[in-house]
Length: 405
Ligand code: SF4
Ligand code: SF4
Image (cartoon, rainbow, N blue to C red):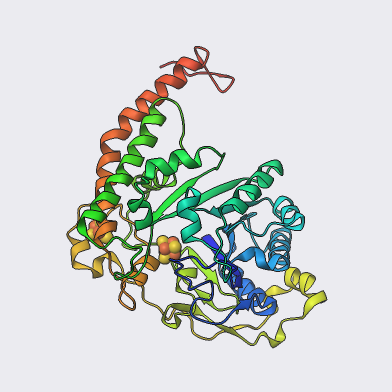
C-alpha cells in the first residue's frame, strides 16, 4: 500500500519564497506544466504495483496554476476505483500558496473533496518578507486571508503549514505564538516546521544557542497542546500528532517512507521516492518508457480504466537508489530513540547534498519530544478521560450500555 503519492502538476510558481527547497518551483530544471501522457503512464505503472493508495496529493511549484491537470487526475483516480484497479478510494489533497483561487478552483476542490494545505508563515510582517510574489516582490498575506474566508464559506477543509526561520526568532515569534495566531481560523491541522536550508544560509539556525531556542520553542508548543488536551480542548498541532504516531508505530530501520510507502511523480512523468528529490537523478526510482502505446486525449479515460494492464510500459531504471538507513549510521546505532525516530531524508539531503545524514537539531528535538510525551501523555490521557467520563451519562457510551467493570 502507498501512504502517499504526490503528483507535481506545475513545476512553476508565482511566488519567490526566500527558503524554497524547490528553487522557485523549478527544482533546478526549467518551468514545466504537467505532461498528461507521461504522468498518466507513470500513474498506471504505479497502480499496477500498488493497488491501494491512501492519499493522492497535488504539489508544485504552485499546483493550482494547472487546474485542468488536477481535474483530469482526480477523474482518472476515481475511474480506477470504479473499475477495481484501486481497491479503495484515496483521499485527495493539494499543497498551495492559496494566492490563485477562482470560482473554478473552488468548484474542483469541492467536487473532489480535496483538502487544502495552505502555506502561510504567520503574521504579515513575517510572511510577506518570506513569501513575496515573483518579480513584483509584494506580500501575499492579505490575498491568502481573503481566499481563506472563501474556502470557509465554500465548506472546504484546510490545514496550515508554516516554515519557521530565523526571522521568527529575530521578531520573538515563538511556536506557541504561531499556534495561537493560527487558531483564529478553523484548520484541521497546524504544522510548523523549522526551515531546511543549507548550513550557510542566513535563514537557518547557525549557532548552537539558536538551535537550542528552536528546540525549546517546539517543546513549549508540545506542552501548550498537551495542557489544552488535559482540559478537554484539542489544539490541532501536527507535531503532537506526529510524536504520538511515533510512539505507536512499529520499529523500523528506515528514516522515512521515501521510496517505500511514499512515491512522487514529477511533471515530466519521472518517478522519485519523494517530491523533495525531483530532478536529482540519483534518487529517481523509475522512468517509464514506451509511452507511444499510450492513447491520446479523448480515448484516454476509458482505455485507462479498462485496459490498463495490457499497456506495455517498461521500467527503464527500477529501484536504482539506496536510501541510507539507521543501521548504516554509527550514531543512530547507539541512540536510545532509534526505535521510534523518523527523519526526513529530503531535509537531510538539503543540508548535506549527496550524503544525507541526520542533523543535530532533528536529533535533539526528537529525543526531547519523546521524553516529554512519555512523561506527560499518561497523565494527560487520564485527565482527558476524566473530562469525557464527567460529560457522558452514567453507564452509557455512544448510545449503548457500557460493559460492567
Ligand atoms: S534521534 Fe538522531 S541519532 Fe537518534 S536515531 Fe534519530 S537520527 Fe539517529
Ligand atoms: S523525504 Fe521527507 S517529505 Fe519525503 S517522504 Fe521522507 S519524510 Fe516525507
